Image (tube, rainbow, N blue to C red; front, side):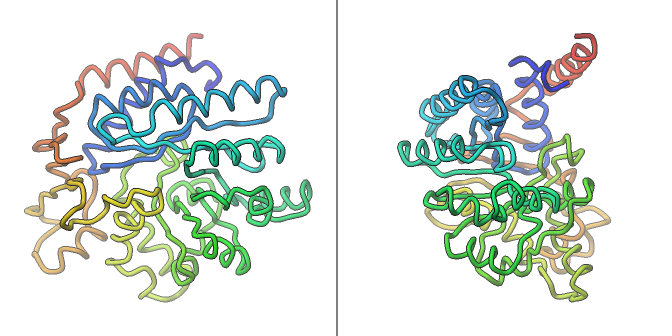
Length: 340
């Protein structure tokens, strides 16, 4: 079905996702995909902040590889710093198991040439790690280190199956890890060693992995999962306490995608912030509101959202996007896919 996608499909799918994210209090997202010019158009219109890249799978002939690489470079160059600075870009080979080593190295060079960070998927499943050893004689972290990825500022998605040595390598190179607890649970990929990553000083952020492998884009749900599952698997009720979970969802998340002027409410930071309606039964009595935000709140509790100092959600309604049109066009795009 994905092979049938057009730029128009991606535009309306992205619009639906951005609408869901903004109304749910997400002010910044990272996305690697195809038809990224259309994604950037939605970002520009909606007022959300984003880190965008043309994600590339290299399991194709060399001429197709080169075309995809050229697209990735062109997109990164053309959109970095656009939309009043709300769009930044990265260079993103999809994964070490979908991009041959010589092709992956070309992305590392492109990142150096453009002075941009890198992003990839890594060590999501046990099978992926085992196959990497069979194919290249190394586990994914050592493999990417050998290919030079960590000579660039980097963030990897998932990082579920890591050993102690790999965590040390990631910490040494200041590589961020995007923790995707909902997706990893749904796909039975496993549970990342988040407490060990945090102890090692690795920047841990939160992701949904997209609606296709999660079902929603509710970052409150991801924050709550991150605060709960690591208690359960470790047997330690103090693992990932509420304040740390909130930092993962905000401050650590911003730092992991190299945004140093968002993620905190502080003088000199950009005005990306949200307001939650706390006058509701599940958020009363008003005791520890930080704990309430992590363990009790959901995306549906978001009342107002500001990005870059501009209000984009007011009383639960997105003021920059036409919700009715987006819902209709997104459904029409899906229905059309079934007929192609």
